Image (cartoon, rainbow, N blue to C red; front, top):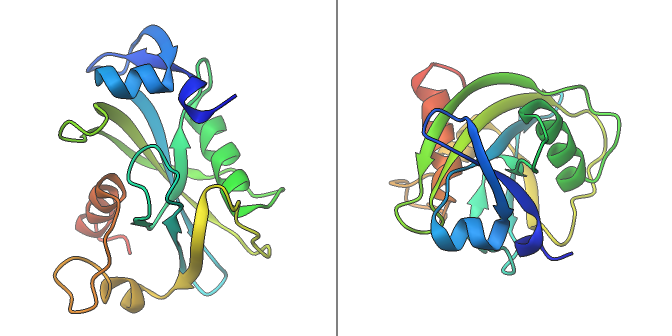
Length: 175
């Protein structure tokens, strides 16, 4: 099954399920759906950062300070956070990610809106990122990450939803 055929729950502005549709249709029609973002830190507190592959349906080849993805139809946010983190990192046996906050993200016409649940997890395992999802990766210190954010001389092109989640973390005093 291709990514565009994956069935998702369609939700309303209050995050209540109102139907189901394939991901491709959800994106094309701008329907509200659910996503998870998992900040992964290693034993030294460095953040896992990656560049998405050019084949991704939204935000291809952009950098992301989170792993994650869409929540499948009938799947809980918590289960999706663990599944996505293990899949993208290429590990098994991660502790269950800790929920931090959620918000409704508006992609500005790229693929609709999505409820975004943000999590945090520590990964002490050697990572083997999924090549279909991750083109490049590294664990960066907070300073190295800040040096690559918008406005910095060495800024990278970041996924806008991940950047919005990261900015909320920073605004809450969590780095």
